[in-house]
Amino acid sequence: MAPKPKTPEPAPETAPADEAPKKARRLPPMKTILLAVIGVAAVGGGGFGAYKFLLARGDAHDAPPVAKPSVFVDLPEVLVNLSNTGADRTQYLKVQVVLELPDQQLMQQIQPVMPRVLDTFQTYLRELRPTDLDGSSGLYRLKEELTRRVNAAIAPNKVSAVLFKEIVVQ
Image 1: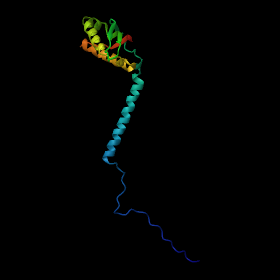
Image 2 (image 1 turned 90 degrees about the vertical axis):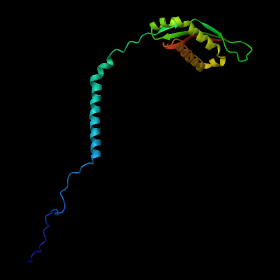
Image 3 (image 1 turned 60 degrees about the vertical axis):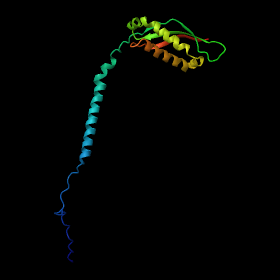
Image 4 (image 1 turned 45 degrees about the vertical axis):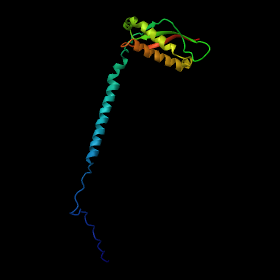
């Protein structure tokens, strides 16, 4: 028998002397800060959501605040002739208005200046043309303008709204 050729044994793996052992990978400082902020925000948001959902639910079942009822003041009927734009017949506007006030105390404060309010209505309404009152947009503009003029006449007090009870163009 012939002797077997010797196979070389593999050499044990050793790291070369000039290579340093591998270290754990580190994130750059900005990424670390960003991740920390996101983590804190997530934990804080979750805690706040849990508080609102679980603990603050008793607030939702409280009775809603009671709103004060409005006070309504009827004004006398106003009848004016509209501005004539060359038409052969005169047209009239008849308006009955109600003022909506936030409270009873304001009604007593504006009673002394009610002649000023009516004068403001008369002078404004006489300058209107029949085309100014066409459609719902014309009535809306009229309501807004009357509200503005009433508030100017009773300043520093304010009415909530001017409401039409009746409006007729004849």
